[in-house]
Amino acid sequence: MSELVPVLWICGPPGVGKSAVGWEVFTQLVGSGVNAAYVDLDQLGMCYPEPADDPGRHRMQATNLAAVVANYAAAGVRCVVASGLLDPESDAPVGPLPRAAVTVCRLRAADDVLRERFVGRGVQAELVDAVLREAAALDAGDSGDVRVDTTGLPVPEVVRLVRARIGQWPGPAGTVSAAGPAPRRISHAPGPIVWVCGASGVGKSTVGWQLFEHARAGGVPAAFVDLDQLGHFRVQAPGVDPHQIRANNLAAVWDTFHAGGARCLVVNGPVDDPASVRTYADAVPAATLTVCRLHAGTEELTRRMLRRGRGGSWWQPGDLLRGQPDSFLREMANDAATAAARLEQAGVGDLRVDTDGRTVEQVVQAVLARTGGWPATARPMSACPGRR
Image (tube, rainbow, N blue to C red):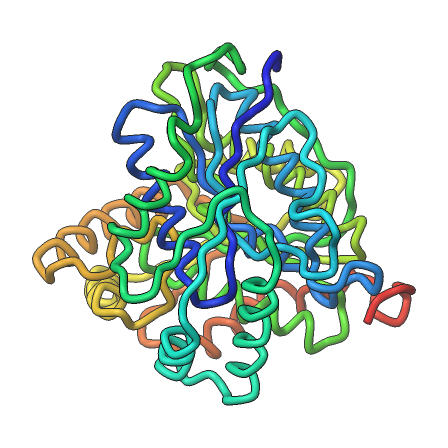
């Protein structure tokens, strides 16, 4: 890598629209032919409890971001859009990102706008007050190379203002890296990893998150990774394997999480065939990887796709279903059923759990029963000093 990688860090208080704006900037860049990537910083810090010396996990997120940026650049990505909070306790606006040229864009919104957004989500009043205090502290400071007031503005207009104020970012094309097969990254961190996979709409994220909560409730320091969120990039060149890029990023964040105290990891995300499973397994050879494939029939997948498209779950960057018409959602459900049948025929996974007619809790209990009470081999929290 011979040049600094341009990174646009979109920050601001919770609820200001960082992810939506960042995703749209990324989408526009890709649409104009730029080899770009998008990272939601929240996804790089899902490790609990937080290290005592890193409240808010800001240093952890910055470490993971630096590694992910390097992995993307090695694959031919020219620039990275990142969205997330700044560390309010740090004198510097952004943690060190080696080999990156960071432009900080701070979004703000009026208090009544932020309050309305959080009240609509059912957030407790005291938490809303904390968000407003954080927003006031950001407004009182001078962080950000550029600033955009989002009050009363739809996302497309905010994006237009952001792009106008960052000028020609990311600048003229340089020679960051030639696109092609990415060099492999390997993690040597041990520990049990359960990977919840399956066709789109089968419930990977929901079940995976509940397994993560189960580990936490059992007193085991745990981390959570969504593979989709480690693979938002577009490189217009042959020979780039998305699974290898995600595997490289998985290895990087598992190293960071393990160094931060995590002793088990829940992964959720797509898999195509046994060969792609091996790509990820090769990235974490010191870990004990269990691949759990969830299965659902066409009727169940259709029901879940329709619910998700109508807003029945939280929005994540890259969600192709939310807000789509029923005809599109039914077509996607049929595609998912075809994919599920293909995975079934290939016998992907160490274990298979049928989700038809089952609640999330019933599916989670079935996974735990089949895995012998995962993560039974992880170290208990009491054996991990420096955690809180």
